[in-house]
Each structure stands twice: as C-alpha cells, then as structure tokens.
Image (cartoon, rainbow, N blue to C red; front, top):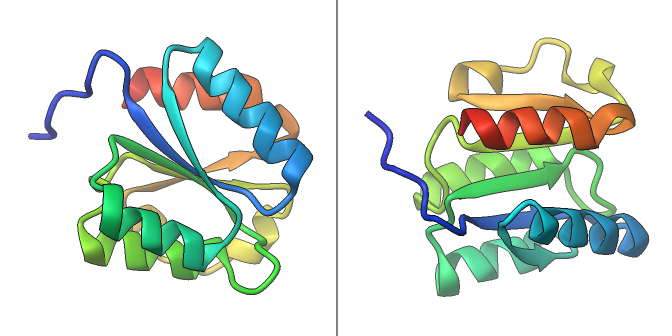
Length: 125
C-alpha cells in the first residue's frame, strides 16, 4: 500500500525549458503542491539525494542532455519517489513505444493537455 501524500505534497519537477518550468511550477503551487524544480537530470539526481524523497515527480521526456526515461529509473533506484507517483510529460508519445515505464508504475501524460491530465494524475496519486 502506498504511503499517504502530505497535505502540501512535494513535487520534483524536471523541465529543461525555463518558461514551461516556471509555468508548471506556478500551476503546481496553485494546486496546493510544493514544487522543487530541476533543469536537467544532474540537478534532479542531486536534489533527490539531498532533499528526497518526494511525494510525486513530474519529468519532461526530452531533456537536452538525457531522457526522462533514464532519469525516472535513477529516481526509482534512489527511492526518491514512490512507484506510481511519477509522471512523464511528453509531446512525443511515440518516443516511448516499447518502453517498460508503465510496468514501473510511471504515467505518461500529454504536454498538449498537461493541466487537465496533470490534475487527474495529482488527484489519483
């Protein structure tokens, strides 16, 4: 059974685009979450080691130097986020064809519909 999420859940948000990162962080705050932001995989892993575990993680699939797929595996390996509470945001779902992320409890959400699907993900977590 998954542990209960805090009243103000901590959300590790990993997005390399500064405008999208800022907009998503503001939206998460408005939703009652505490966003902790990272620009890339290295920053996210560093935050996970120093400040984790987090209640939820929202990760961009296409990061400049790495992929969200790789980062998700590291976060799970570090115990930084519970399985079932990680979402990958992508505008390119075809990039995940054949991926085993769903088996790892990772949700794949469309960037085109991110506010709606992210709200549903937060409610389900």
